[in-house]
Image (cartoon, rainbow, N blue to C red; front, side, top):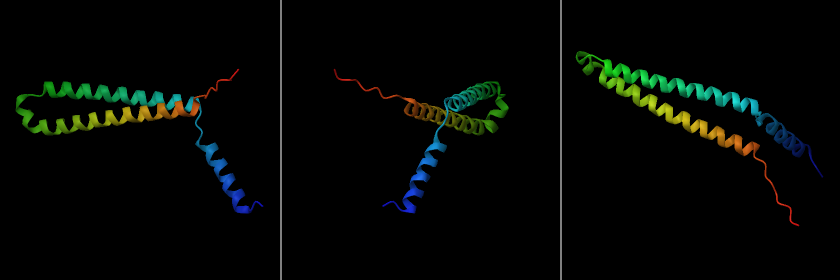
Length: 105
């Protein structure tokens, strides 16, 4: 015999599954945005290096520690973005991969 709670649980699972699906278009859109973010971050890192190289000697003692901290934070952010990209790519492959079963003759 099926009771009301079992029906609720099953319906909840179905609803959660439906809302957790992501379309290919949404995956592509997010991946594109992450690529844009990564490219912007790389450009920012290049600009920071240019700033460090053009810094007058008289200001190096004031700015060296802060620019190093900024550089480290940008580098760490870049690593996190790469991890995020890989996780999204892996998740997309997992969702949309098709299992092919060989038929035995």
